[in-house]
Image 1 (tube, helix red, strand yellow):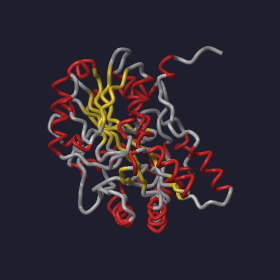
Image 2 (cartoon, rainbow, N blue to C red):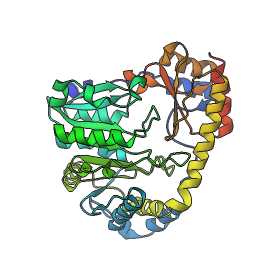
Image 3 (cartoon, helix red, strand yellow):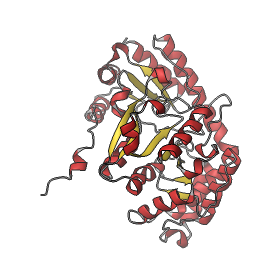
Length: 385
């Protein structure tokens, strides 16, 4: 057996690899485990998506190769939705690309722009696709800790000049996973100007743009003047529509960026199953009727668990968006706290360091179970303080 490639060995290990085994053993022994770890809500997808998929499955044409073109009506639905939601005009054939979930598009982007010796600028903690895509493309991620003193934003002007000079991609994600922070419009404008000045691709992960509360409407990076020259934005149906396993998303941006990603994907996959694209089209067309009610469920859960955690003695910042709470860990050791939470109280939380060393000292709670279960979990966690 040949040795693994050096780039493969550079992929970081998951810090709590034994947690699934412990969780399984606890459940087998009768422990009531409340899982707040993965961002995978217990809610149903839209009926319109289920009905559209069911109908499409009966059409033999939907079983053919989709290729990167995919279903033109899905591309058109994306462009229509982006116009209605963000005021952004897109050519559905040249500036939109269906994805097998946004994760694969984010990961494959590095194959287009990163070579050995190149750097990417990666928020830490952050979605592992940014780091993994960079490493598997042969590049080196420069991890930038997200600190409270910077409002959990990547401090662009503080980045070392030599890092910026060797970088090809800047990854940003706002509203952010895991910190749940949203970026002001002025910061997005700064990021676009920074990437234009330094000839960087701005990969903007906007997977949580629609899970926002109290009237807050997170923007698209493509709303910023000049962004189309440097930015590619990633969207997903996973969180907004409770469709994590369906694997449907899209990229939007300037035609050169979209063409590059499409070409890379041509050698990796043959596109999103056409029936799923039909279901994605149904999701976007039913947005106004369905999404507000789904978001209201998350808001109710957010408010309930934030109040319960505060009452249990935790320091809680109530987020304006996302399906997460980012909470300082008692004693500052997030891994030890997460392990105690599981073993002693049967509650799964994600230690911040699982998403990067910059997340040390925090743990993430996902709003993925009922408000009653979230309140119960908060009470259990309070016993560990």
